[in-house]
Image (cartoon, rainbow, N blue to C red; front, side, top):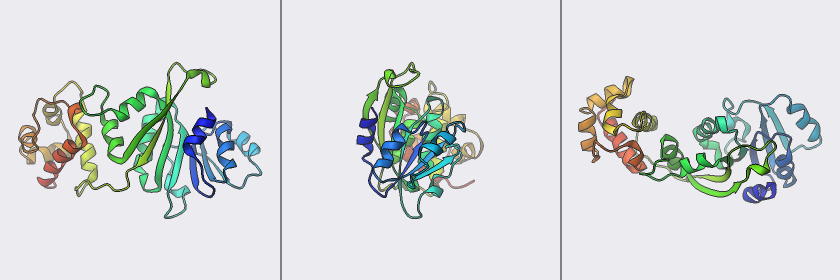
Length: 257
């Protein structure tokens, strides 16, 4: 399985690869063999001394004891360059780390991640499918998604109770949303998915804070959806990225509060 992951990564001499959670260094060893510069981020303080001893003589390894949810990834990449990320993400924080990586996409060109298969199904879910959610829209907006292969629980010790999938996320080279404030889009999407069983109109009516004020300035949820060409009875999972963008632009056009 390590061979398959290394084959998917195809590390190149001199490039920077960020490995999240190197564990005992099985994959790290193979990545270093390529001559790539590996920045290994390990949260478990008990594993750090083991890794330091194992790779003491390798000058291509930068080992950081750090929390991937708090790390500034761009700070470990040479200014102006882009790194690739390799990780077997813990199931319980995989979504949070994925969002963190996308936030710092300016210095990340590609991610090869091992995730719980249902997470991969969610991020790849097209519009009008039950798996589609906020994470689907977010990842698809910024990345090309390529599921590579499944990983059986038998590949791990101890064995998890779920199937894993290795997926490649390659950053879209050019992204133009046509909005002054890109964060507004994600506030709208988040509000739209607040309660999946409710219609998009009811969820937007329940928005709070500045977004609520902007929706009201645009004439209210019903008027806003009509202007965006969206039926008020639709649910969030049925909307495409283009439709979310159209809706967010209509709110933005109403002006700042």
